[in-house]
Length: 391
Image (cartoon, rainbow, N blue to C red; front, side, top):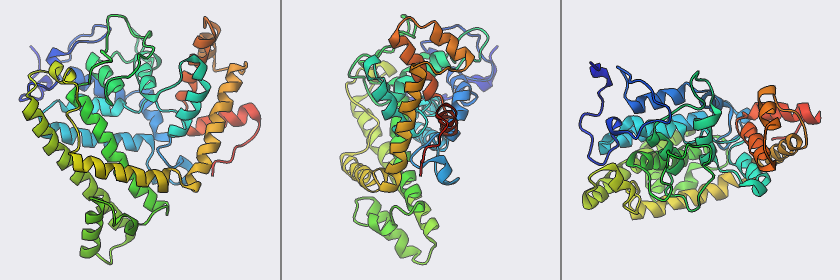
């Protein structure tokens, strides 16, 4: 008899993913008496090496620039918290939403998007590089700790959500590393839970990038006063606490923005779901639209926040200088390995068995993508006997 501890989400909405109805895993496992299928996925991700590496991978500001800036790991944890809040309010599966949120950045390279752009450029002749697809490769073939199989052996729903949380794929990626029977239906939308993870990602980085940017001295709160949504929040806080320390004001702005975004998403999504009335998870996938979204006025406001951050933070000279240097570092590492610089023994063995240049390039990309920022810097110093200026 199953333990009652394994029974969760008694009152799921009909369009939610129910672990009892999961499409399963590539490799059959026994049932757990204490955890649902999606709880097991979440736990496997948290206990993985790839997840721990996120603590030393860049979000926006390089790790060595300050210990209080977000890293890929702290960003991921913030995304998972927001995803659970949204899932609970919408009466869908919290565990699946959390698992996808925790997995969504496992494919990120060292140095964040700068490293991704560099790998995509050098991998151009061999299929390019995308961090969502790399996350799937990490989950399915690169994280090898289990005795009976490669990868983490997660459920279909977690893998689907990891790959498609941003929507259907416009072009077919190379999924040859997946068994043919595990069709992730790339032309459909993902589950409600995956859509929740996607918008939780947007909410988290909008809010925490403002916090980090103020901390870094790139922007000041009064600069946000003209912006929709943010302006009202800033004005309210400045009026109520005019003498409050800057870091506390910034935290209150971050809190206010997250709360405002979450409440808007819940209200707008609940209305959209009520109108469409999907009866099961597949109705969500085949609806031809994303249900979990901001209301139209909030879409415009959120886009203005992104544009402001892009101009004043992501493209600020103090950020772009290390971005350019880190891209150069990643590209030179790739060239060195491709030209014959040895990888660690287990990776070199894979390289030696590679059937062609494309396979060789992908192995090298897998290896570099798994690096943390400090490890990549050390590799650069080892190979080139030189340091690279990242600040």
